[in-house]
Length: 275
Image (cartoon, rainbow, N blue to C red):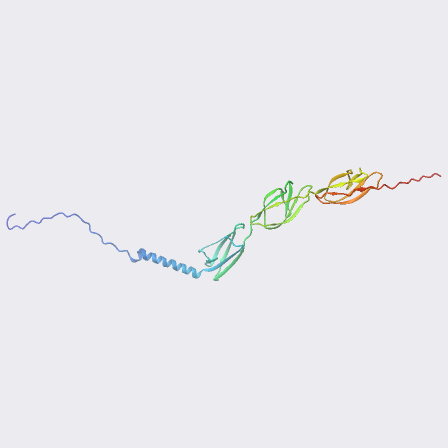
């Protein structure tokens, strides 16, 4: 380098470093913590407003319901056997095992304390009617024919019902039966009583004709089946006075008529004269 000349300036390369942008600060109203705090305050305020303006509603069901639901425009809060609800219209639903589901519309008024009473209705009872060895017995309930026994799964409303079971040659069975309802099954095992009974006749002398209600049935000694009720009976034997009586026969109750001792018939006197 000649004397007196300035020294050259040396420029050295440097690695590029981008400038770090200054972190932007979010506005206060967009920060998470204040938002959460404000939301909590709002929720508490709404709850307080609801509790302050809600009406206390007592819903009484007979019998007590297993579940109660009130649906409306605003939520309903159950507390200690009561319900807190705003004034307005609601749909009330209640259920209990063995009872019909209950549904109705209720109107919550402006009174602070309100009570409603409801009656639940039992489901029909389930009734089975059986008649043992007697088949095809007719069953009538409350005057309406229901079929031939045995019958299963008859649905009857709770309460008293007049039931009649009848079969040929048997006494009718008549009874007022209390149906429990609530889907409870009741079995009626009915033993029909035969509508007849054996009646025995005997006489001295034997071989007398037995006549019942004007019909000759045979000769003594004789046992015949007679229907329950009243009958006119008699014994006839040539040369003897006719014996007659009235019999009262009870179904399935055998009876023996006391032995009949015949009396000789009165003699017949014939008078003839000639001039």
